[in-house]
Image (cartoon, rainbow, N blue to C red; front, side, top):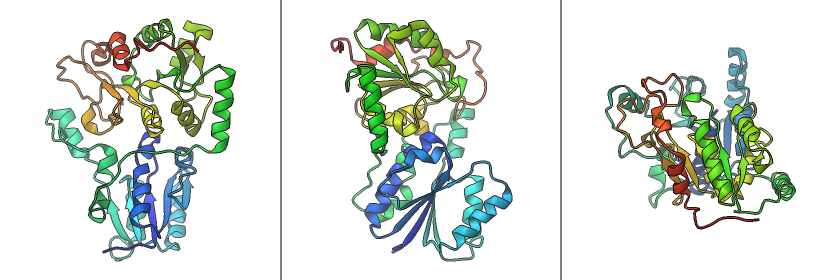
Length: 352
């Protein structure tokens, strides 16, 4: 049985997917405690995995390199003499790296483990309605499968992140400035990288009104240059706290660790929150739980339409245009009342 001394894991993006790879590092460390464990990832996205105690090194590579820069990276990796490559991406770039490091399959070392992206099954579900993912694994579990033969007693697929002391100090300062107490506020992420995945802003507005009336403090989270948090801030003023675009992913994770719940679209924010132990209500429209990105904590909820829509799912990632004559009915039909009810907060107002 393979006993590698030096391991390279490859995963370049995206932010949410990188969070979902965190079980790989912990389980590799548990199974091969003496191995030198390295991650090859992207500059920017890879920062979310900083401070991970299971990794000996994180190699961050520019996302938009030219072919010469990519081959220079491969030459540097060749000199490392890895025993095992764990391709947790299966992109064109990662496949080229693996091919070069193994002399296009001619070398017996390094060994190569690859994830199954289930791309064909997603396409069958989207285009033909043929659901071969109904009893499928989550992405976290799916990406651990190469390790299964080495773990007869099972694998832990829970995610984890590691904000550092500076992140913790910053969040403590912000919470003090805004009079926020742990577990006494609700975080809301009203944006998404793709408009097709955005729950209507009017619904977020109504939900925010309901939560404020119930005595809860509201904190907006998200990335930079997202319009929805600014529009909600214009609507509610100092009744809410807008921190969207002001925090790094790990700082956002530390903030979410202190939240009671997160309400967000199908985005990386849900994965950030759950990695810190905070339950989430995730609102799915064009995507479905079978794709493997549903929240997993016991208190978390996935909210989706109850309408029998033949057009859903229509995309694996939210890209594209709505094909339903009643635009975005999959999201419109998930009401603020439904989401509020999912939080179970009616008898638990917060007055801090």
